[in-house]
Image 1 (tube, rainbow, N blue to C red):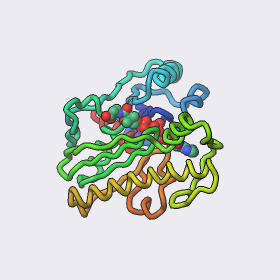
Image 2 (image 1 turned 180 degrees about the vertical axis):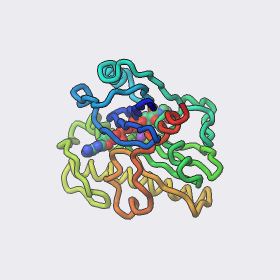
Image 3 (image 1 turned 90 degrees about the horizontal axis):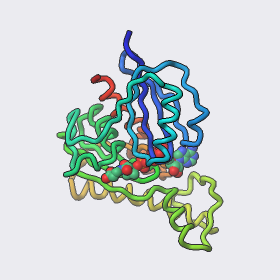
Image 4 (image 1 turned 45 degrees about the horizontal axis):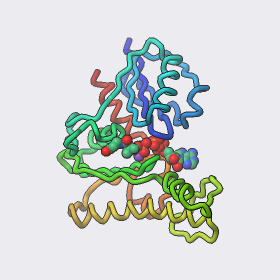
Length: 248
Ligand SMILES: Nc1ncnc2c1ncn2[C@@H]1O[C@H](COP(=O)(O)OP(=O)(O)O)[C@@H](O)[C@H]1O
Ligand SMILES: CC(C)(COP(=O)(O)O)[C@@H](O)C(=O)NCCC(=O)O
Ligand SMILES: [K+]
């Protein structure tokens, strides 16, 4: 019988877990913040775990405790970014410095369609990565995520406050209160980096036929005209992990 494999995308804020069946198909299991991981049980027994971790020590500890309880006898494979693999070449001189989530998202995307691709991942941080039609990663950007941007202002400016509730649908709007102004400013920063990425793609690289892929929990905040230009693909990191898991 084929071993059961568990794939884990452990970001800085949330953990996304999928199961891979014997045919190599992915079935998403859950997408949870770290504080909801402990009570979460796994039904099936697992033989091997494939892990992409970008979170720090606290996230790592929570995850290790959970893995020890839920998949005690499973073999753990921790994936790291590489100089090249699965048709993609990393742009970094120090390949392991590239976030493994960014690396795997590129592998997932390029192995699906071998076309110039722009990936925008808006989670804790917002990252943008460019891969050309030959699988060469050209480099990318790291910027604060929408939540982080707001927290940074609140921490440094005592009169700026937020209610901490998410206000979807605020793209292209003007705030008439402090929480709205802060949310709208940060959501529009996010929209702005996407527009700037498209500008660079079209004017600097002269790409006209490329894929624009969005992933990450903040994607719904983008204005609809930008969302329509791309595809929402939040499972890209898990797809990248699946390439390693299938190869084993
Ligand atoms: N259900 C949700 N409601 C509101 N915001 C969310 C939700 N899920 C994710 N987010 C936003 O997305 C971010 C986490 O997205 P995610 O892509 O999982 O991040 P990471 O990979 O860094 O863990 C949070 O900081 C939050 O701003
Ligand atoms: C940039 C990131 C923090 C994004 O993490 P995320 O928002 O997905 O949790 C992560 O990919 C990372 O820690 N990267 C290492 C530095 C780099 O990619 O150059
Ligand atoms: K990200």
